[in-house]
Length: 118
Image (tube, rainbow, N blue to C red; front, side, top):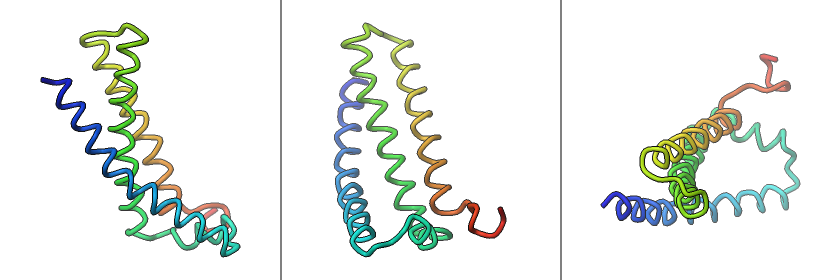
């Protein structure tokens, strides 16, 4: 039963990620074609609740999706089973979530070298 729930959760997160990927790529193409520098992009994303929610949701979906996928790989190729397999999935998911959350915070709220608070 757990395997079915994880399978369905991975498919649902894939459905959620598709529009996030398309939007992210569209924004990046727009920014590059518009000649925006990294500093100009960060000026536009800093302090934006919309971008925080967008990329935060994206990171959450990727963390769940990726950890379930790597769980399957660890089981099939690594031979992990039971609690070890579940622990592996939770650790990977937490790491992906923490790394992604740090990146989202950096892009949307943290003040960098040119942002005033050094």
